[in-house]
Image 1: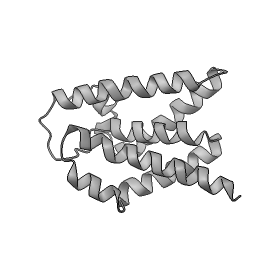
Image 2: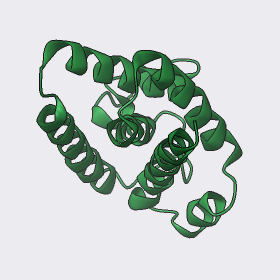
Image 3: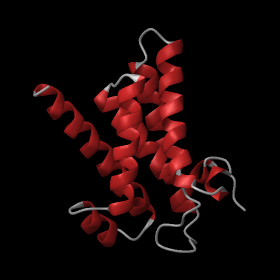
Image 4: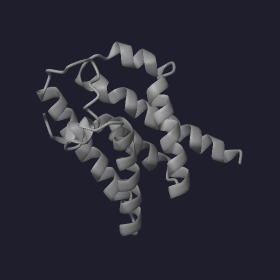
Length: 147
């Protein structure tokens, strides 16, 4: 059992691990925003560090049980965290974004399913969740223009 950043230090081995990883991103985001008066730099640094280390470990550990193993959850964390960075929500809106993110991650609608099928490697594991995070955040930002 690997317990590194790709499994969020073992979280990936629990039931509902993808949802727990997305929820962990929401909790970390809220804590960062409570603790720091200007959290943008912390958000960016955290995202870049987790992305870089996660991609490094995914590339290094090329032996996967499937094209997108359920125990690898760093992708859900990164996708959800990026969504929160872009959307800059309140905690309540963040909970709604979490639900939409998880729904799209499970359903993988077009064009996300095309990306998911095309990239069956270490980068593909992360790419679809990053795109979902961006899509959910942009949908939120555009919808707020009309509210």
